[in-house]
Image (cartoon, rainbow, N blue to C red):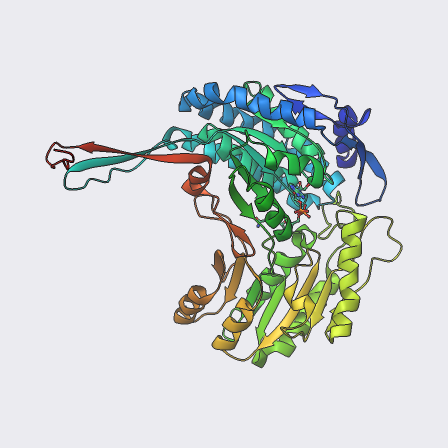
Length: 499
Ligand code: NAD
């Protein structure tokens, strides 16, 4: 069966009626309003999903609350086994998952086949760490032995975006479950199908009912209700910075713990002493893969003025040669944008760029004759810091190039945006690599490399790019409460009052 048919066969199980929810271990059809889900490559309606009603949302949270004590008390080794089985089943169905992501998120097969496997890796990584999740520290003082332990915080909300929906969801849900939390997941309304596959796989792997629930719906209705629910103890959110800000307000009355992975306008800084061929490969890969819909994309290309013209000319040639097309074609490098609304947003930046005085060195228009939301990979050259294309997250296959003079100028320009997620730096000078890495306002810096994830390392941003870190033990810190116990050695004098 070809991959598109594989994806259609998979979602046909969900598309005879609007996709509902998965609550307390069973599918729930739902009574809420139905909304359309589109195929980005054709613009056609793939199916519908339902916005959860308040009652349905309450039922999902109640299921997570009820399941919490038993799941938290389940021996960590047992949690480990179940979550490793989830990973096994993801691997077994990796082709179907990847095909569904191509279909409803428009992402290219060459990246999605790896993203599905990464989802399994995420489960395996946190599964194997479950037995050490509760571990703490011994912090002895003169008269006391202090020791810390960790316990799961309770039912948590996981709210995810549409750019690599499956992989991103596993990145949040796996550590939450490994820690002993129960989960209510709300996937993005533009790409709901792979989330349903994940919750079904988790139950097939033996996850008890209620431990992991999934509700569909819009951000302003279902998402908002979930973040306001008093029985939800923490919110793990991945999405836009302004949504993060809204969620912080929504969760304020119930004092939610929040973890935000938000937007980015990440610089790739190329000094004239760098391996320029590798730098060009990495810069092109980091902005045009995943259709530019990637939080860690290198959307600003800062190039030293001594090599700027030659580097930009080469970059423009490469951008013009990128293979745009059917996400299912293994040769495709850039697929369509997710949705008409997003396509219109990305398109609007062409006029904004030229009005502000940037030069379009490649692309700059929708792909002629395409049915879906295809936009040409675009390179804006000769931009300045004050231009909107140098400041705002466009989240499409659009790169903004800006020249810089020296190290100080590079740092100043790199930091002169509201975001601070990732930074990429190319130089052969080790001292400069260390100095610039230290000065960059970013949660993550890659030197002479594209974004290569190592799961034990922290992932997250500063400034408007986020709050908190994922990865390694950082994930457990978010999903767990730390308790300190102080045991007196019997050597200190207790103060006596009222004697
Ligand atoms: P978005 O903020 O519009 O939506 C994300 C999720 O939040 C969706 O499920 C949506 O329904 C929900 N939502 C929207 N409003 C809500 C509200 N008021 N209350 C609760 N939930 C609400 O983001 P998007 O357009 O789906 O995704 C693109 C954004 O995600 C980009 O800004 C990108 O940089 C960011 N992103 C960040 C990371 C990271 O790790 N930093 C990773 C991927 C994507």
